[in-house]
Image 1 (cartoon, rainbow, N blue to C red):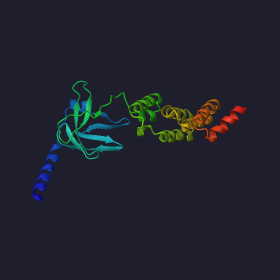
Image 2 (image 1 turned 30 degrees about the horizontal axis):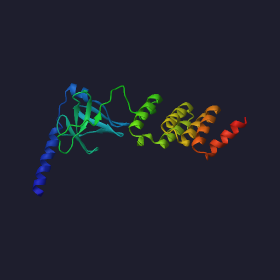
Image 3 (image 1 turned 180 degrees about the vertical axis):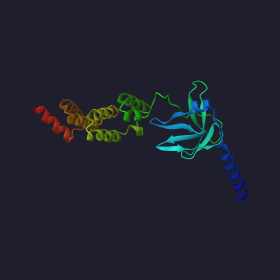
Image 4 (image 1 turned 90 degrees about the horizontal axis):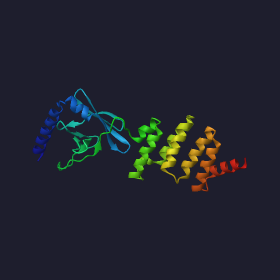
Length: 230
C-alpha cells in the first residue's frame, strides 16, 4: 500500500511540475483575464504574468494555482479544482468548479464586465447610488445576507463622521436606513449626522422616526423635546 501511494504521489508531482509549462495564447489571456463574482460582494481577480496564471482573492495577491491542463487548475486557497468555461447560450465567461465525478459542467462564478463592480467597491468609491442598488439586489435575493450587516454600515458611517465628512456619513446612514427601515438605530445615527452637520430640521425628522421604532430612545426623545419647544 505504501509503495503504491509513493508511486502515485511521485507521478502526480511530475504531472504538476510539467503542467506549469502551459503556453497561453493572447486570445485566451484576453478572454479570461478579469474579475469573477465569487459572492454577491466579492470577486476573484484572474490575471497572467509571463505566461503564468495568477489569482487575487480576499486581499491575497499572486495566488498561483496548480495547473492540471490549459483550462483546468487546482486552487489550494479555495480547495477547489476549477476550469474556465463559456456558457453555450449567453457566451458569458465563468470560473467553473469541477465536481468529484467531473461530469457536469457548472457555471459558478461569472466574469464581470469592466464597467461593473460589487457594492462594497462602489461604497468605498463614494458612488452611493450604485452601492445602494447593489445592496438592494443582494437583499432581494437574501434578506439575511451578511453583506447587509447594519452595524458594519453604522461603524463605517461614524468613521466618516469622526473625520467630519458629513455628506459621506449621511449618505452611508441613508443606505443603512433603506436596508433596515424598521431599526431605530439607523435613524438615530442619521439624525446625529444631520445634527452635527447643522441641519437640525432633518435631525428632528429622523429622531422622530427613531422614536417610532423605539419609544425608549432617550437621545431621540431629548432632541425632539428641545426642538419642539423652540
